[in-house]
Image (cartoon, rainbow, N blue to C red; front, side, top):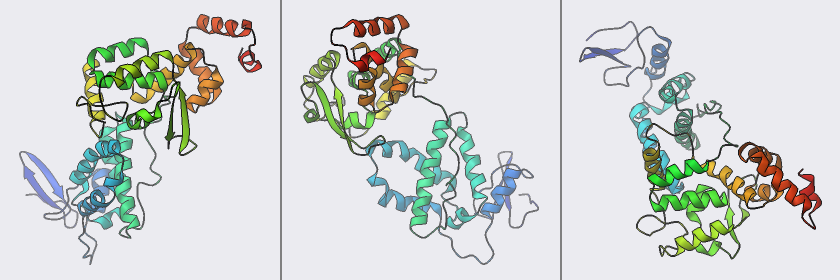
Length: 346
């Protein structure tokens, strides 16, 4: 054992390395002695004089999983469960009152730096620990949530990213038919994954899919998605393949309750073993280009997708060949009875 010049710090040598703890049996201090990270971690973990409150964050993680976690959507539970385990491993032994200290923000930030190369992943970690700490605030255990105001790391704009035909072919070659159904239906309709997995056959009408969605600016709005001939053929194929009440089903022929994201990730890993940049959500942009090729106007696409016409136009201009755009515009201009709205798009 060695000593350091900080009150109460306990040092232990193991396998050639020295580890520092706030006190004997207490939480481990991050960083190397003398570094800002080390002193910040020490300030957070050192026991306050006269304190007898030894309740740990691990206890509140357990309470959160009992009371709040079951209320989350199945997909969210699947994504958050590993993060709750990581938070428990890192902070579970830390007394809750430490999270009322300002320097805890630095400790949390340094922990999230482990995923700095994957900013979306780091942002999810921040979201989960913030939700647990908010649970503590709501219960009167904490005064403030230290994650409030902590900036997100991911700032990419994916509004004009789509899956190309080559991308889809690569996925189809690696995926099960159930994953292929989901990808194709998203590319034909632009329906978000959360809504797509809940979609029932009652929502499928003769020429459109009609359902309530809680996403977007208008909460709980009725979404009406026209069905192209390709979408209708796909739905016929799916309907004849399983007996579930939902349109999409897993390999057992039952509605997806959980496991979709794991199956999707496995297919993506097989198709792109070195990593991938496309997301399921990017299939919405593919749907917009498919609608355009099916003869929809910018306004019709915008209304279907819940986007602005300018956004639709940027995406189409970027991904659809310009000669195809010009041919379509000439066709609409020369068509008998063409509307002023259609003419104005030129």
